[in-house]
Image (cartoon, rainbow, N blue to C red):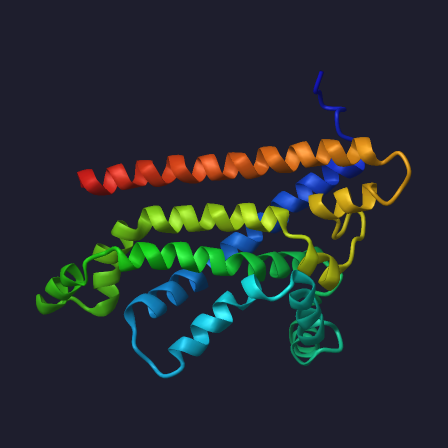
Length: 234
């Protein structure tokens, strides 16, 4: 029977840390994700193709390469990492905050893609009609576009959360696998499989990972449908 003691303390800590990392990775990247998706869907500007390529680059590169690039840029000796530590006292490498950054980078393309599709599904004539009535671009977005793309934003955020939960390659490269500090569920599974007799612990964590991922996807569908119904009935 599954009870409170089904997972050991270290395993529970990995689950809690994974949820924490995924939550902050999603929350911190969501505003930028909406802005990027809107820019790619609606704006015409020099370098748009380059921006689109950079956004989707983590999907193409091996996760270990992405993690290594993060370590080079955001590590304590990296150009950005040195500035963050010297000016703000922020250290990302080998910290849970770094795991959140790695998870956000890997989940960002999925978030942007879902939100972008939602924006492209909105008829531009609706936005143009509001603009002809004197509404500012920001007001048009807040009152016309945002309510219509809300299901896409919700779906993109939850999908990014699920992706962040399962992130492994970039995370372990950037922040290592430190129990209680940076060891997420995928890292804990990997660590359990490296020691004799660790298969049972790995299997339990695999079940937890599957439940969280399936639950996130089901929640995404449920919330998106409810938001869509509210928008349609508004």
